[in-house]
Image (cartoon, rainbow over the protein chains, first blue to last red):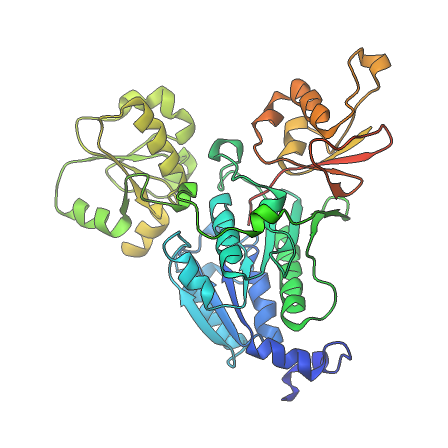
Length: 355
Length: 84
């Protein structure tokens, strides 16, 4: 054992044995945002042997307030590239595996199978349920972290005989009962606290040190530094999942007619006529947009729908592909005969294609 | 009966705690079970009825709908949160 880790190998309860368990461990971190980055920085520093990195987003200005690994000069670059660069510089002994994709029903089982532990650092319910179900099917524990404003939630699900995410929340919340990812505010330091808690739980699961936060939901309130722990039990029914559901809302792209940003780009270059509706807020639209786009924010879609030229094929775009999907569903209900598509990955993806 | 509010329930109610007054003040039946409490709160704050997975804890233990509750219990409404 080299001296790099001496400050933790000298701990009686951790020791060289704990270090060697970390070195052998393979951990997948899903999401390179507010939670994923602090979790990764510490797991990498502490000497986890293999780290899987998964995200498809590019770095935007409004990420910097909480995603402190990123610098101003990284704006517009893929998160995956920047994280790989910085973490390799931080610890050259780590093996990194990059996954340039979002987690989908199609890739989740194959992806997760290669890891011992998953860190759920995502920002949306469908992916969280997808991670849960895949982990139950493959019998993998996962460290859960989630945020709301000044509040953070942490737990370790599916650890040995312990409960799962569905034991606490059986059903995926419908898309309209949850604040949109881009409207959901969070104070910058809160993901730093929760993400590092996730790293700590990951280390405990991997090394067997301490008491894993299984069967307990920890709720941290940053406004008064109050921590609540809620005890909950496994519901045997939710431990017996054997296959994925047919449908995980936004994660499953087959249900909603969608087009990849790349395909849309070549379609655009072919000179065909189409209608492009940008459903982001006008502030976002003013920052950058595609020339031919008409701006009708999602919230005003009902009122200004008549401005959309429905005689051509209609394409819908937003920042990341979530609001465009909602807009599509809304229009589809009213005009079932129309040909509508939403653009996967939204402006984030478009910007990586046409810098 | 004191109720602690987390996540979106805090935004819906507009406060981080809520007390349910006894029936002598409101003239309404005081909820005796988790299910009755959900209905009671749903009548006052209809937005809460929209939450499909709302966990309720009684004295820091996750509670099913049939769990009985008393005026001295500490109740928490814990909806799932999604931010990351």
